[in-house]
Image (cartoon, rainbow, N blue to C red):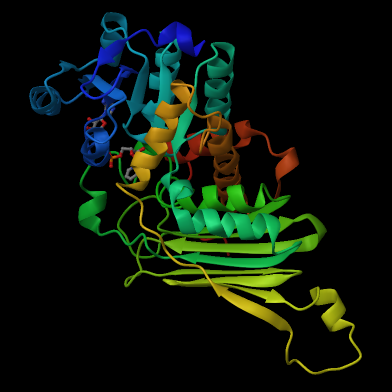
Length: 389
Ligand SMILES: NC(=O)c1ccc[n+]([C@@H]2O[C@H](COP(=O)([O-])OP(=O)(O)OC[C@H]3O[C@@H](n4cnc5c(N)ncnc54)[C@H](O)[C@@H]3O)[C@@H](O)[C@H]2O)c1
């Protein structure tokens, strides 16, 4: 199918013919600047049109990038022969825009979260599959080298995972941030608080590293912001054989920090901000426990530092480059597919239901409609976020 839709060949000096992907950007807010910034380094992406419901933003971007501007994405899809679109709008609009793109046979790279409701994420995945189109999601942490190294250690060197603790407080936000756009900090506009906006990045890492847990129990709270949604989240996840993972994050704490501690049967991986290391055990932990000596010495065979590496432009660039490479047939693998993104969304949806209904969720029995009904109660104001205790 790739050869069918990539029809444009342009001549570049010093090269032979090059294929380009005619791409539109929908949503010209904060994150669009990050994306526009690397386009100059991605010459296979040909920016063709921009769209936003805000006419001023359309005018500015259309003039700056010398492309056609639209205030209605439906008109844009009707009038432009696009190969791909970057959807950079607020959360609830990802679903209708992506579905419209697929109807017009346009590939989609969508900002995180893929959408708010798992039920709609599944529809997006099904539609893309039916139309043989690519659906990628900008969970950009997956392109960062040290998170890739951590994934590799978890998947190949730690052995069976016994427990993990992940605390992420790099998401400090002021009230000025929550007031910077009407959709922020509301059930109706954002679909949640930290759990739907910032924490999805870490839930995506958890899903990538460990897969989906069997059970989820969550506590949401609004601790320090004058908003209706949560600014504080703690999720307890249970994996097979009773392996436990605790995840905690908030948007009220500063200075920021990242703390990851993962114990496997063959070693320990720890991240304390910039200090990252993997310590391998001499023997499996069970053998150490059952050894005749009670000495705690020499159980670590060696410790390796995990170094941070720089990436050429930005983590978003890496995701978009991978998307474009996939469309050009240069790679088979998407860094984050729609299916990947839906995996962590289900966990986030289950966490909201767990908190509001004060119960542990068994994920295999969890139906996305339970979240849809819960969200309806919250957006309509029939229910408010209250403490679980
Ligand atoms: N990957 C990351 O690290 C990262 C970082 C920040 C934001 N994001 C995500 O990017 C998305 C946008 O966030 P933002 O901070 O740029 O928001 P923003 O409010 O600054 O910008 C959103 C823009 O979308 C426009 N818009 C809304 N509905 C539209 C529609 N139907 N058609 C066309 N335009 C429409 C708005 O007018 C606005 O200009 C969100 O999903 C957010 O979670 C991702």
